View 1 (cartoon, protein in one colour):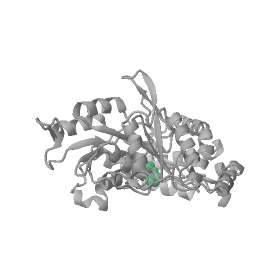
View 2 (tube, helix red, strand yellow):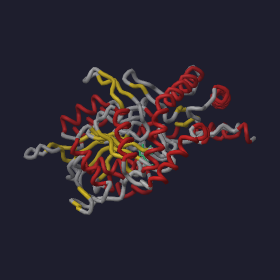
View 3 (cartoon, rainbow, N blue to C red):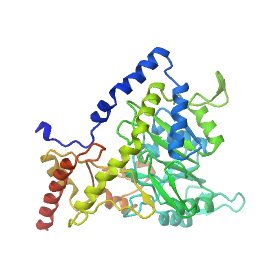
Length: 400
Ligand SMILES: *Cc1c(COP(=O)(O)O)cnc(C)c1O
C-alpha cells in the first residue's frame, strides 16, 4: 500500500517545510551554548502569552509539569480535592496527584464531550458542604477541601467556561485550564461580552508542546499561562528548584525548565500556528459537510460559544471498533481518544469507582473514533476517509 496510506497525523511535512529555519535555531544555540532558559525562552514566553491573550507565560519541560506547577502555584494544598473529567488524558489527574491532591471526577456533556457545568453544580450541591466557619467547600465523605477544578479543553474545543467560572466563584474554587489540546481555541464569554482564548480564562492554564499537538516542539515542552503575577513567579520558581535567585531556594521545586532550542523552534512554529489552525478548520468543515447527513455518524458538536481548533476530529458511530478495522484495511489510520476513561483505569483502582459511575463518559468512550486530522491533510485524502466511513457505517446500519 505504502503511498496510499493515510496517516493519522503527518509530522514530517511541516518540519520539512521549515527545515532551514529550524536548523538555524539549532546552529545559533550551539554557537552561543545557551541551552536552558535564557533570552530565547523569554522571547517565546512573551510571544506565546500574547498569542493566548494572557499576561504571562512560563515555559516548562512538558504539559504535565505545566499542569502540576499551575496547580501548586494557584494554591492547591496537599490533601485538597481537585475536580476534573474522566474523559481526558491521564496527565490531568497525574498532575493533581503529584501536587499531593486527590483527583475526583464529574461527568462530561454528551454533545461537547467537555465538563458538564450542571454535573459540576450537582457535585458541589450533593457531594459537598460549605464549612460554616471557613466558608470552604468540603467533600462530605472524605472531609477533604475541594479547592480547584480543571476543565479540559478536549479535542481543541474549550469547555463551557462561563457557568464554570460562576460556580467556581460561588464555591471558592480555583480554575486551572487544561489547554494542552487547545492552542488558539476560543470561547465567547457572555459574561465578558467577548471572545476569549484558551489559556486566558482560568487562574492559570497548562499547555503541552508535545510534537503532535497543534503547536509542537521537536521534543518535549510545555507552558503555563496566567494573568496573575504571583502565580507566574511561583511557576518560575517551581520549574527551577524553588530558586528565587541562583542557589537561594525559597522552596523545594523541580527540574522543569524549557530548553532554549525547543523555545527557538516553538518561536518559528508559533508564526504558523494561526494558518495551521485555519487549515484544520477547513478540513473539519469538509468532514462536517460530507458526514453530517450520513445516517449513524455524529460529527463534532460545536456550540455557539465555541471556535474550536480541531486538535482531533472525533466522530461518534455505533460500532466504532469494526469501523476502525475497516478503515485500517483501507490504509486509513483512525485512533481512540481515549479507549478507557480515567475512573476505570487500573492506576485509579484505589479510588473505588465502578463502571456505571460516569455514564456519559462511558457510553461516549465506546463510540468515539478520531479520524485523520492535520494541517496538510488533502481534500483527496479526506475524500477517501469519507468514502470509507460512509461505506463502513452503511454496512453496519444495514446489518442491524
Ligand atoms: C498532551 C496532554 C497533556 C500532557 O502533556 P505532555 O506534554 O505530554 O506532558 C495533558 N493533558 C492533555 C489533555 C493532553 O492532551
